[in-house]
Amino acid sequence: MVGERSKITLIGTTLARPGLEFVYQGALAACDNCKVRKACNNLRVGRKYRILSVRNTRHDCPVHLDGATAVECVESPVVALIGADMAIVNSRILFECSCTRTECKAYDLCRPDGIVEGDRYLVGEVLGNPPAPCEKGRSLKLVELRPVG
Image (cartoon, rainbow, N blue to C red; front, side, top):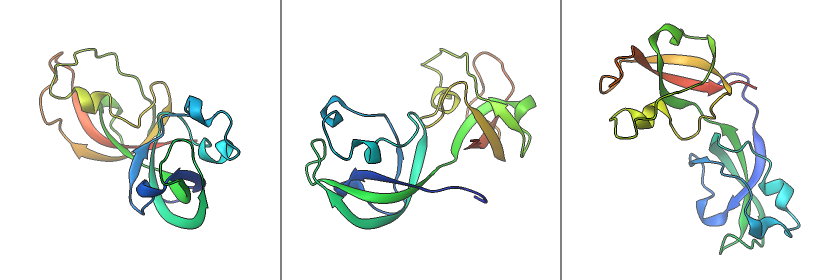
């Protein structure tokens, strides 16, 4: 992605490998007294990240058995279903999903991990039609969303 800014953070050593994608879930209670908690918890809760590189810096960690390792990461694009009228490449959208039909085959794409409800995203690419029709009859498109800001 052009213009993407990387961040240095800490992640469990056994997870620290280039290409790994993860959704940051926030700090745990065990992190409260840790001397490096600010370095571990400097990402946005609910956003999806991809590790670009692994650094040699390691720290003891009360959460991860083998400690924590410094990594360079960027926010990752997320594949999601949005209204067909909003599926325009390079347009900025406010992500909102009112669907509560958890049994729907497309539900995980309407509310994908790594997307924060109410945040702004850039439509990076229109990938096509949904894998299954919307049970509410909405016209949807499968897109790649990139975080804005």
